Image 1 (cartoon, one colour):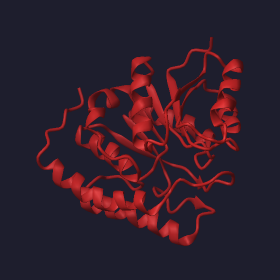
Image 2 (cartoon, rainbow, N blue to C red):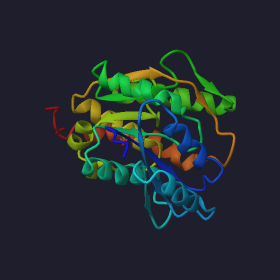
Image 3 (cartoon, rainbow, N blue to C red):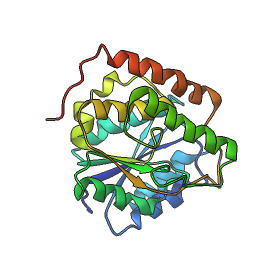
Length: 247
């Protein structure tokens, strides 16, 4: 068995074109990572592919199958609780579609293990705008959404909606996962904001985000709208909430 202190959580829904390649890419890294797939009953057979790969990687590849599309936030919360229960020290979020480059996983790991970060963010906007193959409208929407979040919340992060991250286990044990309310884009903002309010150190690591080449994007206007209006609610609620502090 190849033991690891790190697990990469990958939510999936209709990712048959990408799932085997992304798993093999992560397992091909010099640093040993484990993978937890959160599978939302994909009709395209994604789970079947994962189960076949589990025969090849029985000690490194795990899967939780859910009954349907229950939201990105709930997928990650499910994965976080599993990872905490199984005592992983470093817990990653990553997309299945190669928009997040698996080769950047060690950079996020090093930001936490060597640079003292509690949360490491793969940031598209810490060094300019590092996004490839997105329509200009979507680039601008994402970039200014992050600016908007910074202004409203005071969160000192350039890429507030980023979904490529590494958490120390202590962060997820401290922030109160059952109190996280949002499911879409706003989930990513709420997790960063809560970690910040609890006093954890957040480090942004520059990465290049590449739009998916295979499969279909799950982004839609309602998810984005949740972020826009959810941010205001998040800030107002923070005035009345007492956040647990980093030990």
